[in-house]
Image 1: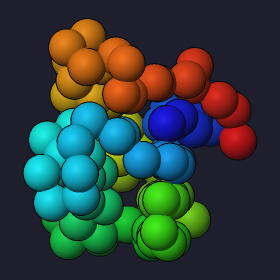
Image 2: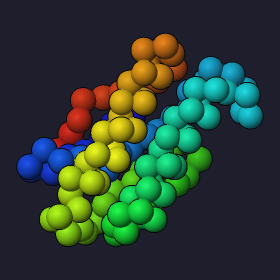
Image 3: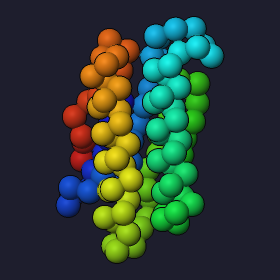
Image 4: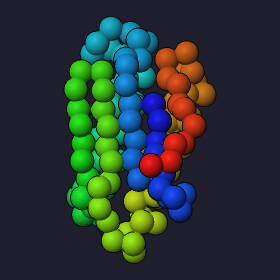
Length: 107
């Protein structure tokens, strides 16, 4: 799982791949927590901020990237994504064997 930032250091997207493997499908609380946070991020960017967001969802893969945005919305986009990142960091602290966050990468 990794997040992406632009040249100015604002987060503008994320990518998650693989399966948590904490438990079987439908009972995996790590997967449920991560999925909930990531889908909430996407919906918040799309519905509240009205950002042009592209989401790609396949079995074992989910990515979300803000494609275009107003400069004035950049701080809001960053705030949404950093909030999700904080939630994921806390999941990683408790279930690090099942969730690995990579360093933030530049786009």
